[in-house]
Length: 134
View 1 (cartoon, helix red, strand yellow):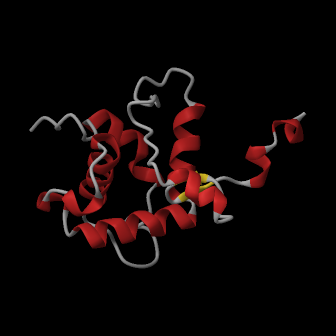
View 2: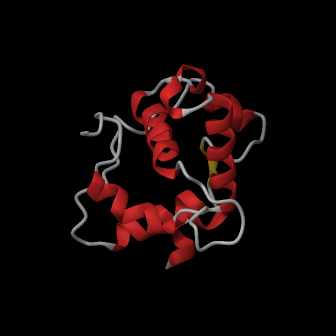
């Protein structure tokens, strides 16, 4: 079965599967559906839809969203991203303005004193000041 336009191909899945929690060799609960979960997250992020519009084939939207946030808070997504960008020949990683969407609520977050970032990915302070790396 070929993946939908929002899902990972077999090659893409092979690149990231070993960086995800819930593998059999790890302590704790084994995740039987990591690929389905990641595909569900990609469906929401790439389509621009709201979580409650997630197709049922990916699971209950509240469960998928909760797991997405849990992985974000524990640094899973950041580790996967850093591993992918290490590969200089990568053709499976691409970020552009059609994938990264901001909502009209963003300016209000700054006024309320919330940390800037994208969704569950808050910016670290060292990312905000480019002179800190020089």
